[in-house]
Image (cartoon, rainbow, N blue to C red; front, side, top):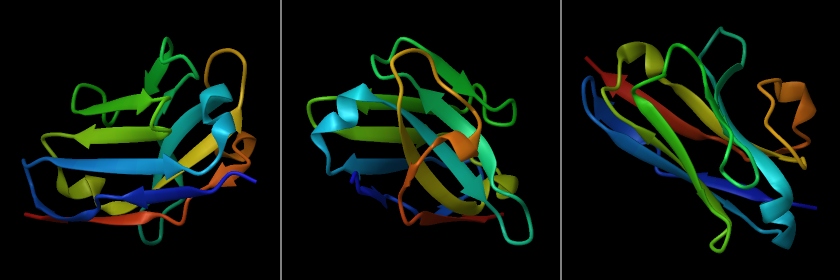
Length: 125
């Protein structure tokens, strides 16, 4: 069973940058679409970004489009989320997720069977 471990969270000043990384333990990483989701206190989990197994297809939530960049390295079995121009509303626990998927990506969290434990992002204004 695939295990995902996020890292890179922490405190960032509004307007600053942060880079999250997610490492997968399973060799099937290259067969998976990968997603980043986040959940703020008192709010539902929301989609942030997703990338297809080849990296050809990428989707972003409107709230992060133009500020966040998702990327993956199938050799290292990692997926990163570069966060720029961070806003206070970006504060949340960020989770990476994996889904074995031959084509495309999905924004629906329920379709991802594998999840990391999350990494906290705190934004100071």
